[in-house]
Length: 484
Image (cartoon, rainbow, N blue to C red; front, top):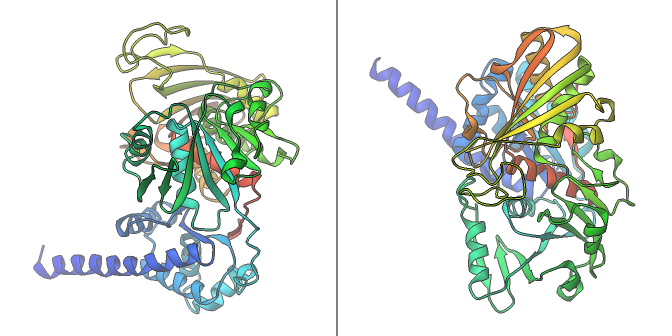
């Protein structure tokens, strides 16, 4: 290769890098001043690095057949800022691809047409009143990830404000330990931001968010109004109580309004999979369940399959990362097999996910069976869906449909799609979707289909929990471009 060609590639890279760098303050201004959340084909742009932004542009070639031109995206963002938009979620990647397909031209005229409802609406925008107070009851794996997400979203009109965390303990050094666990995570990496400690008032200041720590052994000991907290959404991530009576303890606390369980609920508690049955929520639902991570992963894909092909029957086999419920080394455990060392064994166990599907998708009641295998990995799991369909299909048609579902359907935040023969579980750490269909692994034989669905059972699930909180708090945005 000649020196001239080498220089051409490198100069092109530097130019694109410079353009992406110039986009970052525009993305931030749209987010913080105008409450506009930007993305590229569903991949969020807020608080992302230059390299991540360029990789997202590169990703578009898998969808559109060619890489997204960063100059088009830059021009689109620049023009959108001039139009002073109202709050919205804007997929600038999809818009830029549309702009290029129509041959370019006047970007302002293009946006005047495509995002007309929000243009010039910044000053008219209803901010939705005071932020909704949120309390985390427990600060384990899910609690800390929900905290990270809430803090991340605090600057863009989310209207969800993390006010407090309730934990047991309170001994000397406890706050330092809590701060350290939030700051450093062996699976999800370091926290993106700063954390300081207010020892006198037992609080953490996280990216400017003042989070009170309340030490209590039960909900009965807590009065949230003492800390200026009112009508709080209490997220119980302890898993200690899963029925209405147990979770009802939270509602008896002064300052608490509703309780959300981050585990499958028992009895008549509504199990909500956001993107599927969140429309069933009413103001009368004071105790809600976010179902399980596995239920969240499989229900959107099952709905997509049932809508298009009809599901006659099926079996769900979950290959699940080990959890804190298991033992590091062999020891007593009340559950069958779970007493055996989690890092050293594959552990066959039960899962209620297949039966739980019916709570979100009643049309599939009685059609699915399920089982689970816990495996020696700390995060990211897989659900294998072995389905019998009403209609014949083939691999190409099925994958094309699921890819479309991931990009354009109402479930695009729940379903992701990957078409690579090289991906492994660690590649999905931090994925914000409920489940990711592995297209290369899809098997089809007429009406018999086997789908492999990856999911980050910690972070992807936590994102679903936050989406339910936003729904309860009536935090809703218009989406552009509109589905076509």
